[in-house]
Length: 69
Image 1 (spheres, helix red, strand yellow):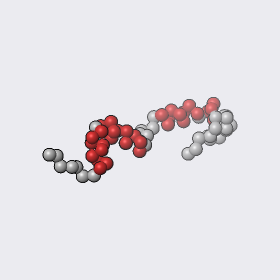
Image 2: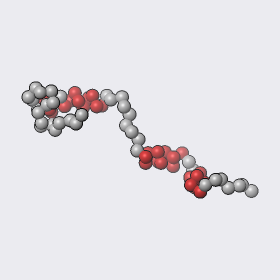
Image 3: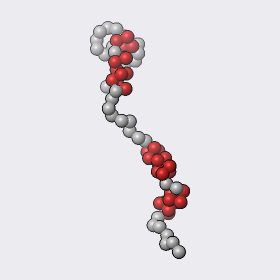
Image 4: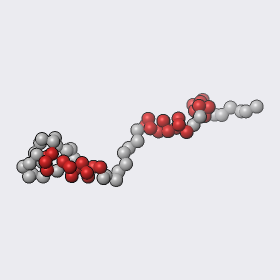
């Protein structure tokens, strides 16, 4: 559901402006939502870079591991 603008009539039909009628209740409801935000792809790559060392990043990108002598 798209929220109306602050100065638009309230969606409940009371005739009052949205900011004076249901704005605070709708903001609280969105803040208490149990759905966690969806992580961005960049967040996954940043996490990988923070966990792996530069050598591990290079070996993952280069293909199969080289034999150690």
